[in-house]
Image (cartoon, rainbow, N blue to C red; front, side):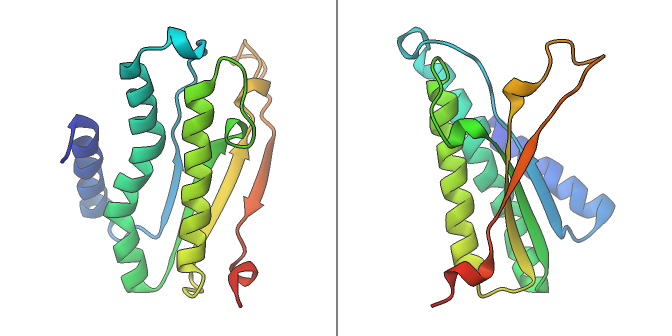
Length: 154
């Protein structure tokens, strides 16, 4: 069942294929940071966080992974908050959604390890290290967690 966000992703994917052609790389960073104590956050907001932060990855995979596999080439890059590595106070739904994104990336890499030309990369970003005044002082530190095909070979 598609909701409005899912339908929007489908339309943009179709337009992208029409205007650009074959998509061989997807870089996806999607998350909502909305600090609230767990009990102060409505279930509707939690649902929105998961739709945008987690389900959007599945919607994009639905649109672009099969063509990548068919052509035998592609690169799937997921940017995820470090909230997916360790929970942070007042970021419960964000942390849970980013843990899910990390799990998705790891499972996808395991599933694709026999596809040597289809790569999966997970990048953890530290959005809380950004200065409050983004216009004059952007500081972003990243670490890249490369999921290596060899680590899954038996």
